[in-house]
Image (cartoon, rainbow, N blue to C red; front, side):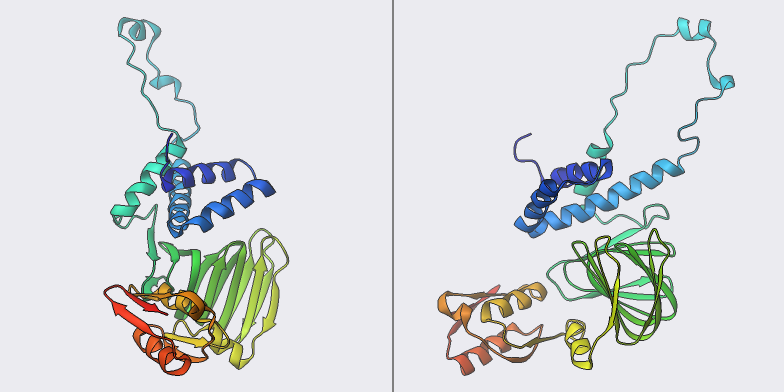
Length: 314
């Protein structure tokens, strides 16, 4: 197939990962593809959601895997007198995943008890989603699957707020919390940070439990043992700046700062030439790139030009 769509490529990868663990070379190839275009990450999330849904649907199908009862089979003479039906062409599961994932781009599925609902945020302000026991506030470029009492963070970052126990699955961990808890996934790294209240994290497969208190951070990378440690008040504030709509720059260049602002705004900052290496420190509102550009001009003596959809800094 020439120029396969991102959904088709993602379906191929999900199929390969289901058959066997990827080799180091395959994982590197997948990482390059995911990093080449932000749309590839969205396609991979959609493919994983559809794959899980089709797997569950197959398991729930009545009589799945069981032979037809003898009483339901037609007698040989009856079967012989009737013409054989034309063979039905069945789509492979990989093709079903690619087609279903492509449909998810243009249409939001109706709520379903079997599949749940998929929520995502791209380059926009965070959004809140109701789950059993509380709410989840999704950061940009994050994906969440909600079905009944279950909620799973597929990618990105979120904060769970609840007055009674809420459950959130993420990577190889299951978090049960009362209060406020930030959870993030980046590649094979899963992080749970308890902001207030109490929480327990359960490791999938082993059932190992970790009790978290306010300020505790639990980090798990791939299949390595989770690491629990406490954050300072300054580290805690910096880790949650995004939820408060603040970006705190402490030595980042204008180029790095622009990348942060561009995650949350449709009006993009474009930094040109040597201006990209200049350093600006301070706290800024994430939703006001114009104010950031004005401060950069005042402090660093750079110039900027505003136009619909972008701000160019020179």
